[in-house]
Image 1 (cartoon, protein in one colour):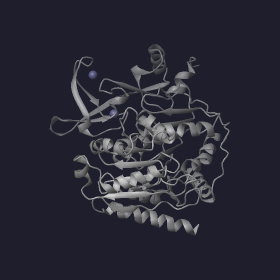
Image 2: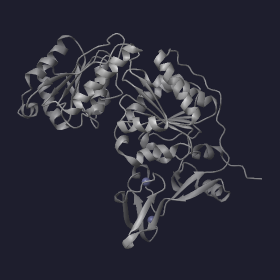
Image 3: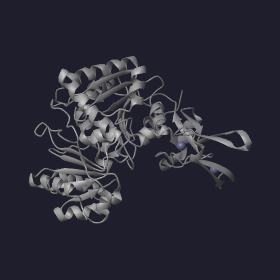
Image 4: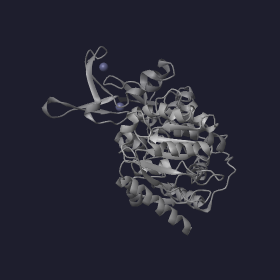
Length: 459
Ligand SMILES: [Zn+2]
Ligand SMILES: [Zn+2]
C-alpha cells in the first residue's frame, strides 16, 4: 500500500524534467516521494573523462553537448571543481552538484471530454491538409503543413488536435518566437474553451495542474521530457530554432518515444522539406483562404541608400513611396536590415510625417506601436525583421530597404511579402524591394511566389 501524496505534485511533474531544489512544493514532500519511488533523480551534468585529462560534459536537462557552452568553476557546495551548462542557464542553473527530478509514479488522468468551439469552415485545401495531418498522427510519422502566408495554418491543426484531446492525449504547440505564442493563445483558448491550456514563454509561471494542451516557446521545452503524444512546431524556419541544434533536440525530447513532431510553416527550409518527404508526409496549400494570389514583389534600385541616409538624406524614391501611402491613407511597414540605420532614418521619415515610428526586438514601446498602427493612430512603422511574421494588419503596404542584405534570405522575403493582402477586404497591396543590387535570394523569393500562384490556379 503506497502512502497518499499530493496529486498536484504528480500533475505538475508529469512530463517535466525539473530542478529538485526549485519545485513549487515543500522540500520534505518531494524528498518523501523520491524515497517512496514516485520520483526519479538524475544528475544535472554528466562528466566523462576524455583525452588529455579533459572532461566531456553533457547536460541532462537540455541535452547540450557543445563543450564551449559549459563553464567550470570553484563551487562552495561541492567544495571543488563544478561545471554548469550555459545553454539552459536562463531556466535556473544546472551544475554537476544539481539534481534533476522526473515523475515515474502513476500517470495523471487526462479528460477525454473536449468541446471545439471554432465556428469557421475550412476551405477544401485546408480540409484535405487537416485530414492528412490526422492520418500521419495515426501512423506516428512526422507531417509538414507547407501553407502560404494567409492560408489559415492554425485552423488546419484544430481538428487533429481535438481528436488527440478526445483520446486523452497530451499535445504541445511550440514556436520559436514569443510573439507567435502570444498570438496563438487567445485563439486556442477560444477554440477549446473546456481544455486545460497552459501558455509558457519567458516569465510565465508553470500551471499547478496537468495541462492538456501546452503552448510554449521552443526554449521552454528544455524543461519537458517524454511529455507529449504530438508536438506541432509553428514557424519551424524562424530564428533561433532553425539554427540551434539544442532547441531542435529539446523538441524531440519533449515528445514521448515514438511519437511524432509535426511542422507548420509558409517557408520550410529545403532540409525540412526533404526530411519530411523521406520519413513522413507533406501537405501543400498554395492558395490563401480568400483565394487571391500572393503579392509578387517589385524590385526597385536604391543606389547607395545607406550612404545617403547616413548623410541625413532620404532617397527620393523612398520619400515618394511613403508619401503615396500617406496620401492614400494606407498603413505601411518599411523593413530595415540594421537598427542603427533605421534609427538614423527615423527622424528623416518624421519630416514627411511626424507620427512615423520605428520598432525593434528590444524597443520598449514595440507592442504599443504595433497596436497604434492597427488602430490607425500611426500611419506606418519602420521595423527590423521582428515583424516579418505573425502580424496581420488590413491593407498594409510593405517596402524593404536594402533587400540585398544577407538577413533577407528567401524565407524572410516571402514572410515579409506575406503581410500584404491578407484580408478579404484588401486582398492585394504593394510589396516593393528597394535594393542596391539584386541578389539570388530576391530572385528565388520572387520565383517561388510566382510558382505558388501558378499552382494555386489549378486547384
Ligand atoms: Zn543545459
Ligand atoms: Zn557544485
